[in-house]
Length: 287
Image (cartoon, rainbow, N blue to C red; front, side, top):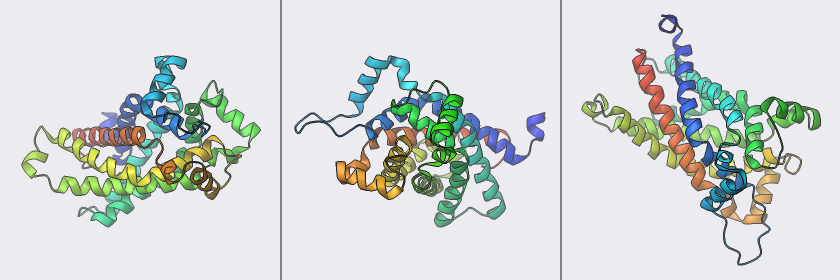
């Protein structure tokens, strides 16, 4: 009864938080592997075999056991549960305010998704920094609270917002591109299919296509963001991280970790949107 009487934006927040919980738990290992790949030091001798996604997977399981793949899941939960909720509630509020009588076009969908992601990204950036450091394996943090305290004491509160520019350059375009492709793909689906029992499966497939395209477009910004958040003392500015990646690895360095990130972001976004839309429909709201 209390849920039924809740404000629509609050319902969107709850639906988004629940969808974020499911997708985060399932795909955390891919995020950890992506972070490890991006932070590998380029100290291999010429001709040495390339370190790929499966090599990192096996290495983590051997040295840190199976549960090591979920290292950083606590800050991931602390970021994604409220973060996805903030994103979807902001998205819903903006859509209701500006597009109550019609569906947004492609350009408007980009702005809608990017705007909602900027709000969520800025709000949750401190937890994102801690999550990235947990996953890198370079810090001996015991808890999220302890990590936050350690960063504030040793590096100052400003370190919690390291990589802000790179994060927004990654997340805002990703969400904007994703929402555009996702909404445009759904428009091509016949009404009889979108209103049938196959709707969740179709929505998930649309999400996968949108996620792949958006992930590839924003991969360079993700690599830069990871370097800035793991080693803010080495890369105080975005341009410093860009120069390092290019000098050490060339253009290919900006796409290091692309496979696990694309898999995770694509599947996570597709699942989050599918669960969100189904929950919103059950609550009698148009997502």
